[in-house]
Image (cartoon, rainbow, N blue to C red):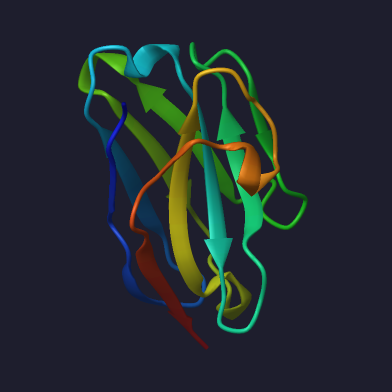
Length: 123
């Protein structure tokens, strides 16, 4: 079992930056791939970025490529999402998810989810 807790969300002006954290419980968190997803009101949950268990592999949605960076510190059981050059279209609840086997972009395939953190970007 893995328990995930997101933090770092908030209100920021367009062009600003935020760093989200996904803190995990469990001694084997370093074995899990982690994805970040977001969901805006009235929209489906969408993939943002993912990172392999070791951190050697990362992948981004086209909409955030070049602006967001995913990283992890397995010694701290934490995955980060650095978000730069934020746009109003990035406004959403951001979720992290983890899975021991799956490393992809489909939300339903991930077994463990956090409660989400709100990111609001004003114009």
